[in-house]
Structure formats: structure tokens, C-alpha cells
Image (cartoon, rainbow, N blue to C red; front, side, top):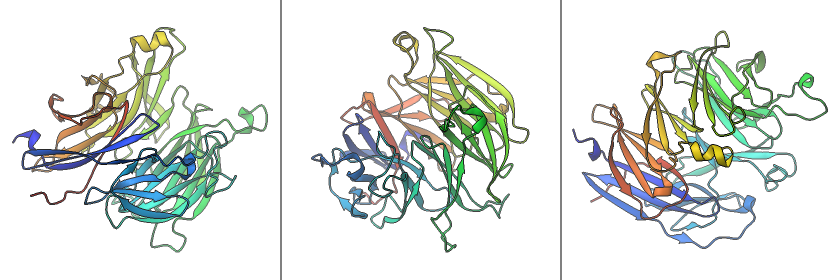
Length: 416
């Protein structure tokens, strides 16, 4: 089978962090169509009042949410300054939650939460003309990261909850995410992650950044970046169970199934000319580090798993001093084979000639991942990799370039 002949439909958002454009790429029967959606003038509104980019519908119209009017609409053009919020799709439903980190200075979402915190907004069917706003819930002041718990064959009684960490406030909020319950989308618990013995005054320097659910143990694990520790939480009783030191990491995530947790970090202090990336495998049962791997001249950015859970993909970026940046390999995609866990073997690397934004995966006729699509915004391309060999089998030219990019899969539509 020709691995480049998969049918797919993708949206690619290209941005310089101030303005953005949308490109739709569709492949059908071996033909590829690239469409630039129109750009509308910037609204000029304050950041918290700008329209939020929600998705793209079946007719390639932009789905926008007006946070002031609390109204969704389908538009032909994307306002240049529309806000592309961090989006966390719910693996248990058609919902997605959009993170609002609040005003840059205060961290408050003054539109919805006054001066009492920032917000998360629940949407449903976000890439469809029937997309709808469900609720906006006030949580702690951002930056936010999110995680979900929900029932599975192994743990059918696991409650359906959304967990949102708030960096500025040092809190972890728990929201009911179960439309069969009367209190759906209600904030039911706030964990204050402050540990008084670690503070000199009244502040909260927990700085949570990385929440992971392990189906294997049935527990939630939150990384407190400021304290250099991990907090284990029982989601049934909403109680802290254990804490363990885990210094040197800035994010935490679980491999599919949750048998292992992986911490990601970077050492910028030991060597003035080199950044040292760090990956550590944490056993959620004993909360012990089983393996660590150091990667010189790498700064790890986003992480992805293929649908089969065979590989971990890590994008790279630039960080550190001018001297350290000069030695960084910031255009490579790292691919780790997970068969050897808890040991992480040296990764395979693919140099894509620019910073990689996000990834999407496409199956062959047997349902096995065949292609990996990578957005490379600063080169203005989507690179298609053979999932087995990691060879670049094709690059789709987008006709425009920006330093930042985000890619997501859209439902297929009829194409004559």
C-alpha cells in the first residue's frame, strides 16, 4: 500500500503569537487540496474579550466563541487576533475543554470570574456546525494544565472528572465531567498544594505543572514544579495519599495505560554552553525512579503517543542562554520505543529543518498507524513520515510560514 495515499482532512493554525491564519489540507483518492481560509481584520479587543478559535466545521467555516456574549458562531474568516486557547479533548466523550490563563498580570479572567481566578470552558462537537458551549467554570489563576479520569474496562467505577492545575495559585481543581449527574460541570474540590514547611512566608510556590492519571493504579499524580515533588491523589475519595521528591522535572505524564509515569526536565545551570534534557521513568506503584536518561543539547517541548501506545514522540525547541541556544538541536523530533520500559533507550531522531508544532496520526486499511503528520510552521510545511521507518515520504506546502503551528484532524467530508 502507498502510505502517502491516506485520506485525511487537517486544520493547521499558523501564528506569530500575535496574529494567526488557518489552512485546511484535505487528501482524497490520492489528490491533495490546500485551502487558505480568509483572514478578517483584527478585532482590537482586550485579550480576554477576543473571539476564541474553537474549530472548523464541515464547510470549512471557522467556529468562534464570543466570551462576552457567550455565543458560538460559524464564520467564513478568522479574525487576525482570535485567541487560540489550549484545548484538551475529552477521551471519554465528544467534549473538549479550553483553558483561559487569565490576564497576564493578575492571572484573573475578569470577564467570567472577576478577580477570583481564571476559567475553563467546556464545548461539545467542536469541529462541527452543531458545536455548542456547555459551561464556563472558574478555577485558580493559570497557567493551566488538564487531565481526565473516567471509567474503563479495568476500572469501570472510576469517576468522570476533569483535573485542572493552576500554576499561579498553586492549586488543583476537580470538576465533575459526567452528563449523567446533576452536578455535571461543577467544581467539587480544590486542592491547595501549598506545603507550609517549604515556604518562608504566606506565599504558594508549589507551581503545579503536569497532572497524570494512571489507570494501572487508579490514582492521579500531580507534579509540583516549585517543590520538586509529586503528589498522589485518590480520585474516589479526593484525598492526598502520598508525596515523593522528584526534583529537576518541569512536566509529568503517563504512558498509555498508566503503568509508568515519565517526568521531563532540563538542566540549564550545570554547563554554560549546553542544555541537558532529562527524562525519568517513575513507577506509580512505589513512586520510585526506575530509569533516567540525559540528552545533551536538547530541550524537550511537547509529547505525543501513537494510537497503539508503541512510541513516544517528543518535539524540541529553543531555551537557555545565547551560548546554549547556539548548540541546541531545536529542529529534531525524538521517537522513543516504549517496548523496553521502564528503561528508555536512546531515541531515533528526525531533523525536520524547523521547529515541530504538533503531530497527528493516520492508519492504514488494517487500522494500524501508517503515517505521522508533523506541522513545521517556520518552513510552512506539513511533513508526512512513514510510521515505521520515520522517513519523510512527502511534504505538503502550506503557502505561508509562521514560527508557531498547531495541527488537528477534522472529520472527513464529501469531495467530488
